[in-house]
Image (cartoon, rainbow, N blue to C red):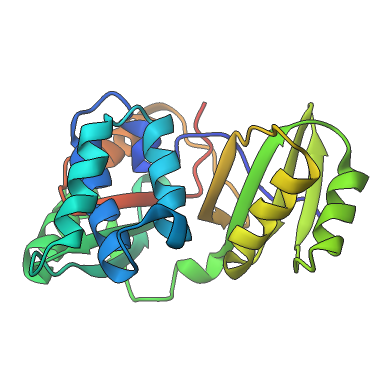
Length: 239
């Protein structure tokens, strides 16, 4: 059936790769992953995967280590996940994931981004239902059949395997992420994953042009400036 997946700027980390704020956002996520599990990457798959992502986005080692060491200590901050949904510029669909220690501040900051760009927050569940929540693993290759064999051999409940333009992409339920990743690395020694994440993929994409596209880019930039915002997912096809 073909999943709608592009290597595009749907994540705050991708849109702000050169922004120093990405360090603080990774620090917060690393802290939470270590605090909720154990501050030892080998025993905490979520933390290990996050460290790999941080390194790919050129987050310095000292930033990563400091966040983990902080989580290993007593006390510390208490962060909660918060998700906001709405309709962005041009009728786009938007999901905003945050980590916050002050819900009042966070909702105020996010609402401001929507209001100042003529956008509108909506009820929880009204937008997310139009996306698929999936684990996505993508790498250079074309042997779709061998990938499927590896998934079945490892008893991975894979949703779909797509081969297109020299890239193979595996789609699986979020809970199968680590099992699918392990199966791929064992089946293809030395494999380098270009994409390895749990994300929201829109069931339909939307093209914006002219003023709407410009306002949408402004909207993403404003969300990126919110310290509590971690990821933004949308259905806009960006060039």
